[in-house]
Amino acid sequence: MAQPEPETYSIRVASRLSGISADTLRMWERRYGFPDPARLPNGNRVYSAESVQRLIVIARALDAGYRPREVVGKDMETLERMLSRSAQQAAPVVGVTNEVWRPAMDAIIDSDVNTLHSRLRQLVATLGAKRFVTDAVSPLLVEVGRAWAAGSIDVRHEHLASEALTTQLRLLLASFEQASEGHPRVLVGTLPQEQHRLGMEMAALYLAAEGASIRMVGADTPADQLVEAAKRLGADVIALSVSASSDPMASGGYLHWMMAELPESIQVWIGGANAVRIREQNTRLRVVRDWEDLDVELARARAGVVGAA
Image (cartoon, rainbow, N blue to C red; front, side):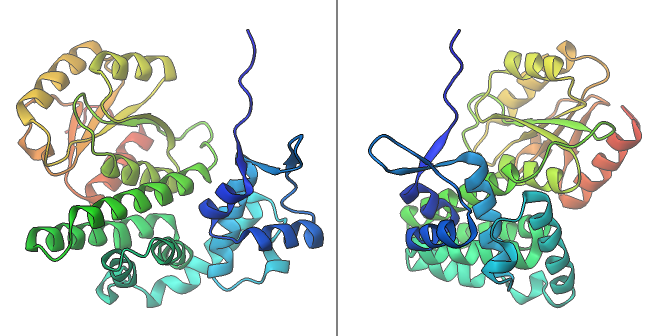
């Protein structure tokens, strides 16, 4: 059976995903030897997924104040270490009370896609992955929902925010290496008929930043496939996002069936607006109401405490 071709990106797409202009990418190639794209028969450059991921992290480092000569060509481990130092230095002076997400909200209102992506990258560079989720994405989504309910923004603004945030969350998640043995293995997805992805993407990045080994199965996944994937991957936990638009009764039915089919060693965590409305009772089914709850459940999973009260 033929192996699939590795994923590659044109210079236009690599530029859009990283926020680095095509001219700059060509200049770095000449000056630093990175990125080092392959060439198509017509001479066009194509970039590997690994190169694009490094470019995204390099863009974060530049936003954090590093110079190109300090970061271009560095390996992913070195870049993440540099960003971690930068975030730690910045963390004491930046908090949610400062409304650090406000410039991103302004870009959403203005329908300014390029500025929105730039503001999100700056937030990542300043806050780091975990606080990006808790101090930027969470309150930003609350503000988007409030503005939409008040009629001050339209559906197109909400869609713009959702797409930009999803893109940034996925790219950040891709920059995390899989955790080594001894860390909880968490399968992340949503139940059938649940199309909202942002809660799932946020939880996955938060958990990855805390050292969990993440396996994504995506939205609207059949219950039997969630169970089968968890068994085959040797998951310790299935983490599911249950949005306000979900049907709590249907979700409870799926969970009731899953808990009967899953091995005793696998927990299920549910979070999101409708998680508290699900009636299913099981010692291995945990309702995660906020990020603090998630920290608690992750600590239990690390300790190997399954079904504890």
